[in-house]
Image 1: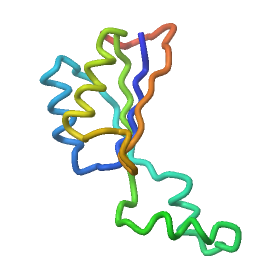
Image 2 (image 1 turned 180 degrees about the vertical axis):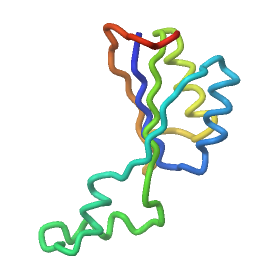
Image 3 (image 1 turned 90 degrees about the horizontal axis):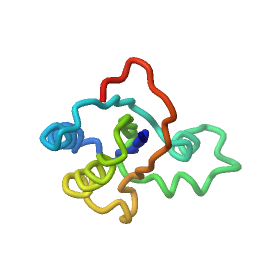
Image 4 (image 1 turned 60 degrees about the vertical axis):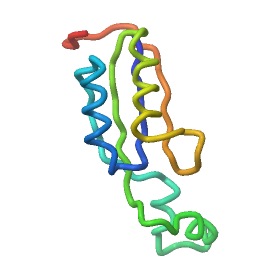
Length: 111
């Protein structure tokens, strides 16, 4: 079993992404609104140490979605395919990141 963690930077795709997961038999996910460390530091009034960061975050995106999914191992590739289909290639700049963490045990999780 794996925990798939997907940091979706293009939040406009959230509803389509969740629909496509559902269409592919993945019925559960937790969505958390988030902001990255660099973006938060770039907004800081105390920019003397991080002055160049502001330049890196000129686009209008202010938050991301962290999507958590506890899944059987065989569903992980499906999630990655849905990410690429709906949101595009994660190798592109500012496109998000996805990774897995092993789960040893669950309680209250129907898979």
